[in-house]
Length: 102
Image 1: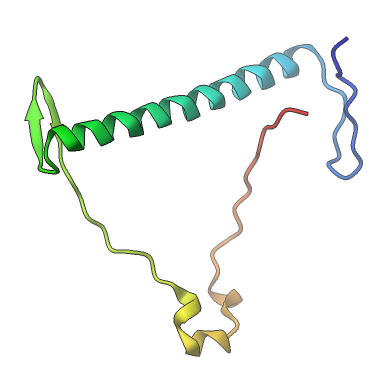
Image 2: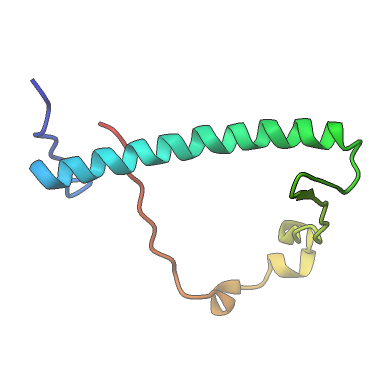
């Protein structure tokens, strides 16, 4: 029997049926596929870089180029910032959602 009665006061969850469950299942499956294909892409790019001898390359209508961007700033290493309240410089909070199986 399917467990559709997951209720948690902590997470404010309620029973969901039919369409919600179908859409949640499709979203979860899409996320799983995205992760799989991201790993596949990474594997193929490693092989392409090797075949390209780590040089920009093109062929068959495809082009592989390298791009360099500056590294991120490690704010924990800036001593003067340790004594400052940086909240006034924060941008607006971002709301995100996570779908998981229970």
